[in-house]
Length: 327
Image (cartoon, rainbow, N blue to C red):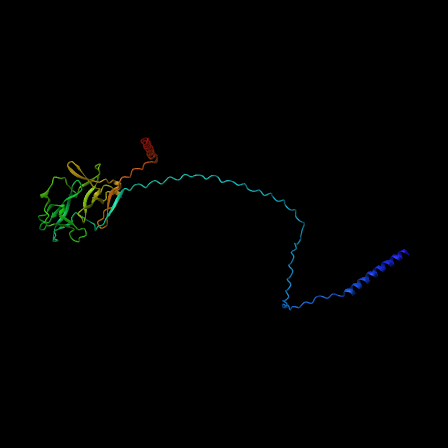
């Protein structure tokens, strides 16, 4: 009976709760949603359906076997920094030796600037040829003194050699006719003969200072100012047995007195004669001179150092003297 009573109480409580929930809905009624103005929203056209992409194939390993054991990783050893060795100082190579000094010095004389003396025609101012030059003389200073002219006779009879003063001639190296003109007032040099030593150049033997033979003068080259520029030397037998001639600069000649006579000298060794180009009548003249002696070597830095240290000492002495003067 007690259990039935409890069950009935429970059912009565449930019915009471249901009744109360129904009464609340009747009292308050159903609540409506608030009224809101509707807005027209544009509708986008439906896009075309996107085709579904095929699923990516899943790679599967074929014939998968048992997993291999992983190898242990080797320890990473960082290399130690190795410092580069100090640079090796290589001594600079010694400078190349200076080139050997030249044996000779050559000067080019154009054919239009000088004319040969031997056998050149000599004319008067009116153009009449009166003879040919056969020789010239020079004094101890190398200055021309006289010209020897072979005056023509009649049909070769009565030819005679006459010395005229050197200043009585005009030279025209480019003349087509006679390159030498004798002035009308020229008189033989015998009237004004002096006692000064003179040397006839043609066929004179040129020697070295030690007396060795260099060659024989066979011609002289004269420019438009009546100044000799070079002598033509026959050096046959000096360096070879063949006949060979060379041109030597007039300025390279020296005239020395020996046994009361003048003797021409030039310092040309056999090697220098051999290095000189030959004299050719129809080509430019290459006149040779001996090469100048080499310059003395410059003073070393060690010998120059004491001289450089001298001025400070002198300056200090001057300073001391000035200080004493001030006191």
